[in-house]
Image 1 (cartoon, each protein chain N blue to C red):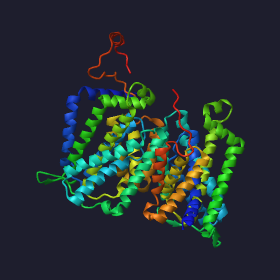
Image 2: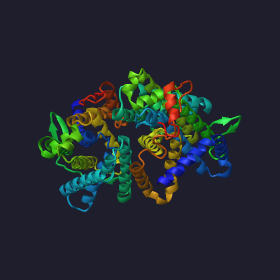
Image 3: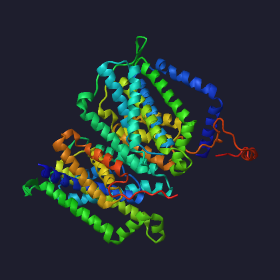
Image 4: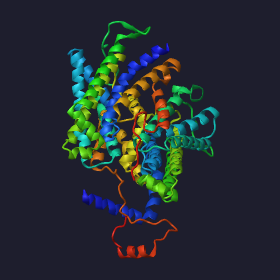
Length: 291
Length: 348
């Protein structure tokens, strides 16, 4: 029973990890809490729904959703955030702009796709699988594997490629990176593309898992991914993955032992406790004030 | 744009100079509103604006003066509403007493939040306030025996004075709102002009420097959040009594975001900005009902454009008026001479 719940939690936690990584990527470079990430996640799910409705098939829907959502992230950066950065606007200004973007995306989705709950096809179904005496559905396992694959791809991009090196340099010190000939603007835009991509993958996986898509699905998932990111130390990628899994497991255990009404809030209880003890998250670097 | 700015500056200077006439006239007009407009809907929107004015002034203490962002301010509002609503509905206590308990409830929430965030600042503080908001919502939803859980609290009594019951349509709530907003304004002004306020602003400017100057920053931080919680609790108690029904959904994350947006929109640190911001952003979706589904798209656009072209908010930004020294403090002679010499130039 316990093991089963933990495994369930890990499976779902991988998706939260994907969302959390999206937050972390942006926060690492811009120190910006991207509050529109939840809406972008919902946008990704709706793009996939659109592609499925056009009968393009599931793999095409996946790719379409990733591309469209990545482009949305890039557009958001170019059109709205880049001018603010050029003016050296304080962080709170960017935060409010991003909240504005979130309103726009969510309500445009409601206008274009109707605000009802729509059914989404099951992603994979080839019966149940037994691991360690625990039965898991194939949908869960595929969700876990796909999320894992994307996390690995992301890690490779960040750690092994040239653009990844540029991203890491901009994260350390964007001014110095700029002086070294790195086009920080392009790097930031690319980061938004990656972040959007993570949101899209997570969106498709979650809607395939619950077989449901609706416009406000981003609020809850977004906040949960967000708390996962902060839990692990926002800006640290592996921290986000751990955070996501912790949130997923905490949620599964809470549903099993405390009841369904604790489902959505248990993540915040964990977050609250962790931040009380370690203000910068599990793996976050401590901020040192320089005088 | 520049001409507009000059006209605006002259206008505010005029208002400042004629303060003793403008304020009583303004209040007279405001008091007469329910006699002129009898529509219940209109008065209700005005009351909502008042509630948000109080809430934003309360967040302004944290965000505008202390320089920290709170993304869970609705939690403090919620605690005020529930403390007051439950005492009124379950024990039948009169509004005036439950109002005080609402304020205390908000202050208790502020104390918890203040202690939790003592070591944090910036994004992490924002995140923990968010988590605090969600945790409060969870407690309200699951503490069924006291809070009725998702069903909410019903039949919250209306206030009455000498046998006259306050309702929205007879203007009672509107006048009560005016009184509460006035209290909030006075508290904000008092904070701004006191030693306490100066210490809090010092924390915003540079916490480390403030600490080195002997400001007990931890104490002032907690006190500010308690005061802010008390104000939000007052708004919550008022809302509970006006709406007569509350549930956890009346105080969700969206409300926190709305409060934060109004504070930035109106201009961090500016009290008139909070009121004007509330008037604009709360009445906005009501005025634009014709746009139907598009109104929140327009709302989002408005926020973005505002941040792009006037990031300091409607009434925010640096004051151009000369700095007024607090009472009892005099400049050293040398500085005084310099100030006399540079008369006409703007100081500060």
